[in-house]
Image: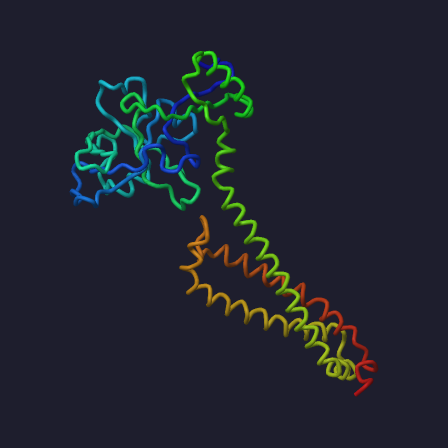
Length: 330
């Protein structure tokens, strides 16, 4: 259908990563032969996706073991499927995946047809939804063995941007579909699909970042105000110290030492509060553990630097106190 000049791979699929949550068929209930049978209504489920040969290659999804679908996987051949590594880790429980057989039912109806398929390959896990923290278990079925009319065409270019192929795709479809029997809803790159799927989450992240920055600014103003007031209350003390021989550096160190004690105490309290709050924070963090040492260290470093910046002006003011000016008015 497409000229092969700049087309590296072409494939079909009933769903796309990040683009169609759950796919056009959705979840499928299944039983693994050789594993303990599940009670009715409690069968395990996995994402169910219909793909053509070349789908994984078109998306650069690695095949970890076994093989990808080929043209030999026809409607009259042995029913086969592929699963991702998450499926293996979650549901096979020590059973060798290649050659294992799973009975799949794509409908919840009691009389739904059950198809027993042999696993011929295991793929790397891929996020199917923008809200996923970890990739869900997935079953891939060859298009020739499970035809569907609601399908996506995937085209991977050899070089350059995928968006450059859009006019060629439109022209190729128009040449073949002269009677306009096929409805082309959208032509998008995977980058555009991912950006659209994650737009709400990115907007929320920007809002959180904006409010966090505002909170950090207010904290700096608060620390600056407290330390400035504290320095002003101790002006006479600093003047007396400098009158009896203390240097500006001595006064500077005195102010900074007090700020350091306040900072360390506050960080320790915050660290202790972060532990019980960790479970709640896990629900709003993506891909980061609330107890991640690097994350906690970075947060503490940012807060420490914030306190240092807010402390410098009052500390430098204290270091410039003149004994005569400090004692005037007392």
